[in-house]
Image 1 (tube, rainbow, N blue to C red):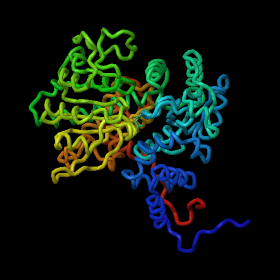
Image 2: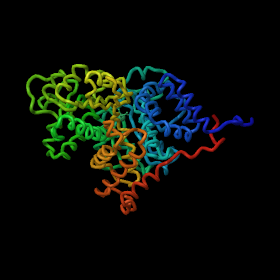
Image 3: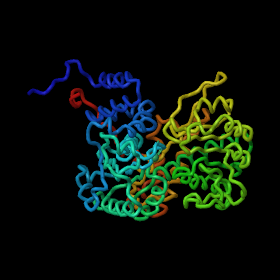
Image 4: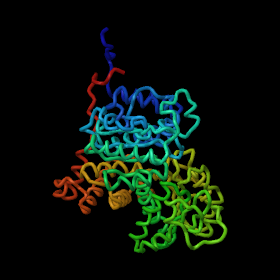
Length: 529
Ligand SMILES: O=C([O-])CC(=O)C(=O)O
Ligand SMILES: [Mg+2]
């Protein structure tokens, strides 16, 4: 049979536009996701070309929040193999399974999830793969990593979510998740095999359940080149947003930067990871580590976390308060009035937890309260942006984990920040890959945050934003990568001596030159569409 021919008047320029028209004709975000995923399968260069030109529109589809819908429904929308599944049934031969990946020597970055805590959506089992794919699409778009260098991995270890076990279309192993000892042995074999099979790879752990997120980061971070995006990436991006938000808030109130107080609502991997990262906000503003710790308060489902609470989980102990005894304090407004925070950060996945009373309590204490409802996706956000603006009469300094649109209030247009780790992980990954760092250190993650905070341009500062605009993401990722490389050199964790010889401007130029661009598409070189 002869192959189909392109229409005589076909042009690439028209076709890019045609793809956008087709995308925009769909009303349901998940359908847009399915369409874009299909386009990527048909012609990945065209897909990335369109993505780079339309980041603002497409990132919320390919990534948070719609990637959450894609994960929840993945067994039903599945069309073709993508990424790499490694199953608990592969135990004992994980090396062989990894070796089937086609671009072994080209591979530079893997995002690995076990699907046990996808965004705030819980245990989605083998349906978690799209989160790894979405993160890697951002590596490609935001940091110019070559698509063939990316390895999306989902560890299929079973699921404790009954509705998936009962779903005849579920694509994963039908069994409950393993006990700790079995999982530990699996992870040990998996990481050893990754190291052998992909000698140059950086591993990003993503969306593991809280205890395992901390456990495996601690276990592997000094053996391999690995970081945890939910603990370190989120910590870094919020540190950066807080640096800029505190500056805005202090400019209005006159409060010294070191006198801010932060209340965390939510004490999972992201909450505690962020809280630890924020210690350096205070230490760089002159406080001792102990004083810094005293500026941070944490709240979980049982209320203000205090040291006298029985059976407190290990990761919550560091910030447990010793200055409050007596009956547990559970009401958020009471806690706010007791703590008197300048900043309230939500990492709880409790929709609308920041009620009008909560916002008003923050406003009564602060001229410009900092409120960051960071839970993802949007349906789990502690506070919607229109409510935040209305209840605070436009005084709030706001950043959320998922994207919100501009809001008009009193004739003024207000613009929200998106405190999402997508600003950070691509730059950390790029820097670590280029410098061939042995590990990813805390100081590298911290320098990434400061590089992001200082990357605002004059227009963004005048608009009182706390994060730069997404349209500049490649420039920003390059600056972050630069900071990460320099820090790795200071700590002697780098393994690319040539980069040490370059002055700053040349290093930045080299990073930008290394960024992959979709090849210029020639008429009639598109795949069959
Ligand atoms: O994926 C995102 O948008 C941010 C993130 O890591 C999470 O919520 O787990
Ligand atoms: Mg995550």
